[in-house]
Length: 198
Image (cartoon, rainbow, N blue to C red; front, side, top):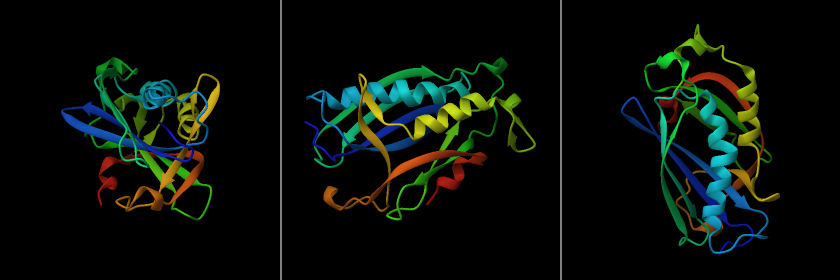
């Protein structure tokens, strides 16, 4: 069962050009109304509908989301993993941008000084949407992704989990996690997955 304030980690594992990519998201439970024993399944349903479906619009159709996983870091017990084969939605004539580590970048702005700002990188781009090391694709999907990264997850019409930025290292007991709510997300243009290395 979920408890108010629980920290939930959601992993979105993707495959692209023979490489496995992963985006990790964190949410804090803000409302337990409607969350029963299947709460992680409900959160994954909302995540796929609110985040993945929007992100996939800028991803080439040769990329696919292969696994979604949610776990409760606060109780250290609850976990759900779900295999998938959700394709990127941008066909772009099948010409994907190489190398595979090129990505679109976002800054997740913190709402307090408890953490640094966060970031997200979305890989699997179409070559015809990039010119001169910059994104020239439509701004509509970018605005939608900005909103998705800063939006709460829902069960029905109820917001139940807010996106947060977790301070690293996160190998501490659940009660010691330091986090800041995501105030908003801002597109920062082309970047690389390589900048994620420690």
